[in-house]
Image 1 (cartoon, rainbow, N blue to C red):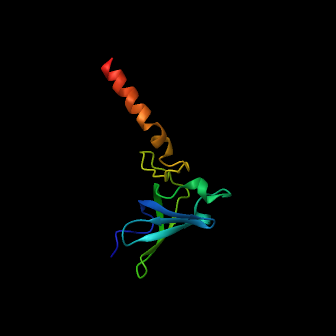
Image 2 (image 1 turned 120 degrees about the horizontal axis):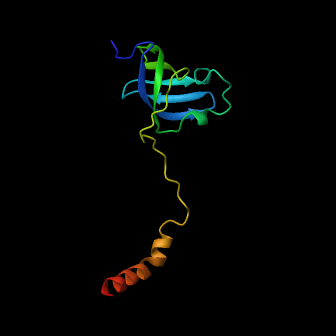
Image 3 (image 1 turned 45 degrees about the vertical axis):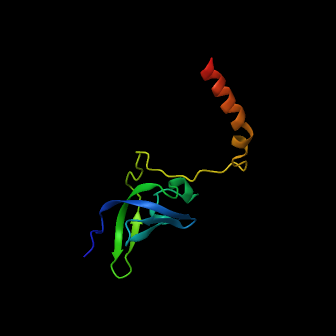
Length: 118
């Protein structure tokens, strides 16, 4: 018997965002989908507006399939955002890599040595 029951609100991590819904991992065994129809009572233009991959949110369990360990989820009518800094975003690369460091390291070291000697 699972700890997940219909109607229960639990934490989950967003593992994917598609046009038709948001994929959630509840633990190592259970995962599910918030179908676009279960995101809001209003029109949902862009599912990305409701979460990012890596973000931890609250979800309401609609149904649990014990055979496949798949759950149907909803964020309608609940305060699903967790505002405690759990958001994880991929750092975007600038394209210059370590070039600025390579170009300026010698200068920065010499400057710091001069400051310390003064």
